[in-house]
Every structure is written in structure tokens, then in C-alpha cells.
Length: 271
Length: 355
Image 1: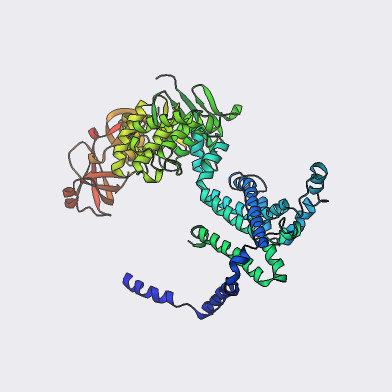
Image 2: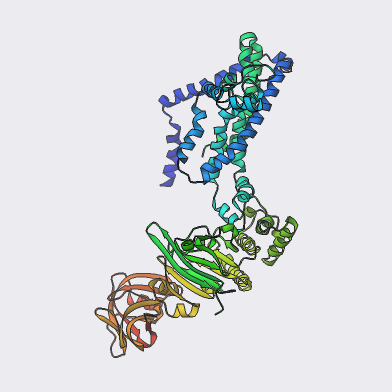
């Protein structure tokens, strides 16, 4: 009986309906072809020279710096937020969770406009910051960090909250029976338990911050050396120097693929 | 009995379920909460640990109210002088065995070196000095259990709580670990409360058994008295006895409308009658001329039981009988078969149901 089933299984599995196979192939092509185009059109001979051009290097350095700072900011604020959402019952928790994910679906440009309205020189908080401390956020590097954090934080919160929910909270109970208060339990037990999820969330957050465009250009503008990150540099180069745009794009593509490779075990492979 | 170290009345309401268990444990005493799954044993343990608040009642340890809803008294888990061995141990997977055991002393304000020294000492006492630097996933089930015990004892708790401490072990490891656990529990100066559904674990480890069913204490006492005089079907099954409740008058106990058992003991009023399955004899025809309790029964089930065959019989009372394989073959015991059941009065044990 089982042998009959075994023999039949591969045949049945092998029969994929053309109505699914053809659009699936087209979908794959649609996703891969533009990336291949980027690689094909890259000016490989002048690549080293173009990569080391001051403009490209400055943009790259700024991008890495701001994305890293944004990730640190997201970790400082996002991990406690994720803990709150995962571990504490409070009224309106579902609403808070929905709010946290808004930047995921909000067009980044709208996010940039919203940031301007709050942190702009005449904004709700920006005006007060300007008057009290003389601090201006829009069109500064700090503004870039802020814009990137706004867009990237949900990735971290969702990843860490998921890890916290999946982690066995009884370890925290065990820590309590050994005399650990909530904070010690958090730092000595909870965080190590969710470390892989935390790392994955941080990497995703960093990647999202690195690629941020809409909110950054709206809130922080496009000043080389100060607010011009890689995506902004690509956009600008597109109008003046196509090859330069391709090279910069290639760098971002390499970073993205590298991140995917690093995360493949956690995010790419399905169950 | 010395003054109790732990004095508790655990009342926890959970949906339609109500747990109400009074519990007093003397210093050095080991009490087992024994009961079927869902009886509320683990809830009781969690209430003692402060992982589940009481609805009413109190938990008083060494004169200090840890939980007393009536006067809003509450000491959180991390400030209770307790140690807990969880059913699946819950060793921190990111820490070595040594650091798992040192975790408690560290939280109690001991510096890292001293905490590690304490931990090393405890690992030595449970025979795991050589495994100190292994991670929990590199330990066998029995080793993990011992690390969990060392971790709980390393904080020198006034109250040691164990939740099914041997349930996750295979039969062989269980035997060894049980003996070793008994040694450590005997050495523990504080009070110990052990939760288990295994009567062997309870009898081997505890000085006193508290049987919990449906959130209530149904019987309490030391091992011999509980096994000799079960008061519920659950306990009777645990200790392998047939148990009936009825009305006694002299040497007769009416256990069913048309069945009065003749017993050796003499008593009046509500009573239990207990006898061993091996004391039950089966006959193809009504046995004649002996002072026996006899009645007609129907075979409901037959299964192997050690070297014998255990026969479940329906009739005026349900009864389990142990017969030899030879006798079973001779009687052609198959479900539905009618047989005569006989029990000697001298093989029965009757005792009052009250008090």
C-alpha cells in the first residue's frame, strides 16, 4: 500500500499546472531582470575609479553612519516598545501595535512631511527645540537619522516582538524564583534568549535605513556630505551621470544581497 | 510535630475552577501534593511561588505573609525565600551549568567569584563537578534535573518547590535520580512541597501525602496510612485496591442495593471497604459452602498485569480481579462471559468513611 503511494507521489508532485507555472516564471523574471540589467550595464572597467570618487565615498560613508545611528536609536527605543507589546497587558495594546506598523505602509514621503510638521522649525516640537536649545533637525545629518529611524523602526519592533512572543516566558518566571527582578531578568535572561531575533531585526532595520529615500529627501533635503545618502546620490546622478548612478546602485544591491545571505536561515527559508 | 514553617491556605479561582488547599509543612518535612492531571497541583505550587496570586487565603512562610489578599499582603516572587525545580527544568540555555547554578546567589547580592564557588560546590554535591562548563543542551535528562535541583538549592531556600521533578526522565534514569533526590530532600533544612501525579515518586520522596482532586484535598497522611486506607477511587487505583463506600452494620457493609459485603472488621455507619485484586477469586459456577462474599459478574475486560491477568468485572459493583494465566485460560475469560466472584471476609479491610 505504502509503496504504491510512494511511487505515485513524485508523479503527482511533478505535474504543475501551466496556468501557475507561466505567471510564476514571469514573476521571477520580473524581479530578477532589472537586477541583472544593473549588473550587465555596470561600467566594470571604470568601476574601481568611480567607487573611489570623493562624492561616492562621502555618500557611502554618510549612509553607513546614519543607518548605523538610526539602528542604535531604533534599538534603544524599539526593544523596550517590543517588550511592552509582547509582555504587558494594557488597554489599547492592539491599537498601539497597529500604530507601530503604520510607517511600514505609509508612503515615506508622507512620513517626511509629517516629520517636518512636528520637528520642523515651526513644528510642534521643532519650534520648542529651536527656541530652547537652538537645535534644528530638518536638513541636518541628525534629521537624516530621524527620518531613517521613523521608517525603519517598525521592522525592528516587529522582529523583536515576534522573538519575544516565541521565547518561553517561563524562563523569566524561573529567573524570578531565583531572585531576579524584572530589569535583571530582562537584561540577563530575556535579551540573551531573543538575541537571534534581535540581531535579525537590527540587520533588517539597518538595511531599511540604508535604503531610505522618500522621508529623508523630504525632511532632510539633499546636501552632499550632510544629508545626501546613497539613494539620494543615485537619484541625483541619474540626471547627470548614468554610469555613476549604476555604480552607486550596484553598491546598494551588493549590500542588500549580503544582508539576505546573512539572514537566509532566519527569514528566507520557509518552514 | 514542630511548628509549621509554611502555613498556607491556597484559594485560587480560575474560571469555573476553584482550588482550595490548606497546607502546613514543618521544617525539614517533605510534603507531596499528589493528584490526577488538572487537579490543581501545579496551580497550588505557582501560588506558593508567587507566580499566581491567591484569590483568598494566605501563604505564610516563617511568620512572614507572602500573600494574603485580605490585608493586601504581597511579596513578589523574586523576594520570596524559595527555590523551584520546574517540570522541564527551565535551565537558561545561554548559560553554562555553573552559571545557571550561580544565577541565584548572584541575584542575592553575592559577588561573581563567591557565587561561582557556591555553584561549583553545589554541582559537586549533585555529582556534576565535571559538567560545570556544559550548556544545558549538552546535558542528559538526569544531569539537567540535577543542575535544576542544585540551582534551586543554591539560594538556600526556606521553601523548596518541585513540580513533577522526575516526570521528564526515562524509567532507568528515574530510578537513580529518585534515590539521589531523596538524599538531597532529606538533607534540606527548609520545608519542601513536591507536586506529582506518580504515587511511587510521592511515596519514595515525601514524609506526608496530600491528595488533591478537583481542587480539594481528599485525603492526607503518611504513605502507609494512605495506601492502607484509600478514601477515593483515585487513591484506590493509585495503590491498586478495590474500594467501595457503603453503610456498615456490624460485619456487613451494604455497598450496592442488592449486595452487602461481609467484612472482618466490625463497625457502624458510613464506611469504606477495600480489598486487593489478588484477593478476588473467580468461579464458573456459584461456589458452595464457604463463608464468602459471592455475586455474579460479567467480564468487561482482560489484560496482562505483571505475571498475572487482571480481569475487570461488571456486576452489582465493578471489581478488578487478578488471576493466574492458567486460571484465566481454564475459565475462558472473554468479555461478556458470566462468572461468579468471591471474596473472603478476612481479605477485606473496612474503615469508617468519616473522620
